[in-house]
Image (cartoon, rainbow over all chains, first blue to last red):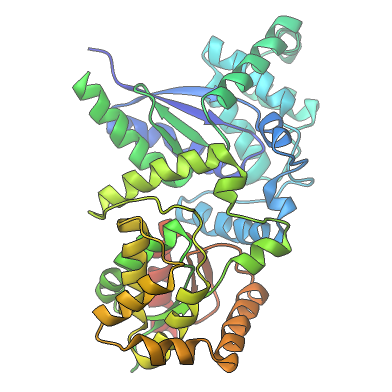
Amino acid sequence: MTRPSLEFWYEFASTYSYLAAMRIEREAEAAGIEIVWRPFLLGPIFAAQGWTTSPFNLYPAKGRYMWRDMEREAAALGLPCRRPDPFPQNSLLAARVALLGVDQGWGPAFSKSVFHAEFGLGRSVSDADLIAELLRDLGLAPAPVFAAAQAEEHKARLRTQCDEARERGIFGAPTFITADGEMFWGNDRLDRALAWAARAGKAA
Amino acid sequence: MTRPSLEFWYEFASTYSYLAAMRIEREAEAAGIEIVWRPFLLGPIFAAQGWTTSPFNLYPAKGRYMWRDMEREAAALGLPCRRPDPFPQNSLLAARVALLGVDQGWGPAFSKSVFHAEFGLGRSVSDADLIAELLRDLGLAPAPVFAAAQAEEHKARLRTQCDEARERGIFGAPTFITADGEMFWGNDRLDRALAWAARAGKAA
């Protein structure tokens, strides 16, 4: 019997995706669930509803609250919390590389290293030099990774992921989707998503 | 020693305020916290940022998800879940009456009865006849309550509450604020808010 699975849709510019990425493996292991890492971009989804930046910038009271909430929630998880400048970071290159990494088995490790650099250390992950540094830290040669990640075919694959996200009703990140199609939005819903995936796995 | 307190800011048109209202007394009792019920209106805050209706209507994908999430979260709490038509309901009269009820000691009971009628039974709480029925169920005569709730001075008091909410950075509901000024947004943060209030109470 294969383990039940849960799709983890995440965006590198998303603060709550950071919290989810840093704890999902531990929680999933405890629940006996296989995580399918699915990097995507929220930008096109936000743009389609008229937003030109993060809602946390568009709505300052919500943004101020979010950063305070992040401090508290990160502390509760024992994680550092820094605000990158600018926020949000351009996450296009990181997402292309992560999508390649998921195919090649180093996607989760790379994704966690991006999130740690960005929201743990406050570094600019839109910077290709930083992405190269993170790849080298994982023992990967940046040049061939960048070449593959920026090939037309791979760029199109990321666009297809983003289309799929929108078609499946994703409007924010992180989002979790079970094998039977149940959607859960937000780091706060990870526990519910894992429990649903475990039940659906038993019923299947 | 007085018990530590927690302000509970809620809006009758808010689905997640329903979930919070129906469980906050039990949770607060267990945590040894006094709840200060603070009905207010989100409409003026939403209008100031250019929203003319609920964000769950403005952003349909988010709205579809929210109703599904409400079904799940209500079920987890053993609560019924119905969608009133129209959504959101005009909550002005209910808020005026609830604010009066908080002064007179029947605010929490009245507020829970409004939420139950609206999101448990799907009834129109913008309807004065329904509000009158709910008041009678509590043993209150509707006519003098309506007269007091719609007096100019009381209407101004509700406006003052809404101004205070905006000035304190409230942007959604439910919102919880501890005596030392820490803000928590959303039914999902009730546990954290109670824990913070309990710690702040011990330190004071």
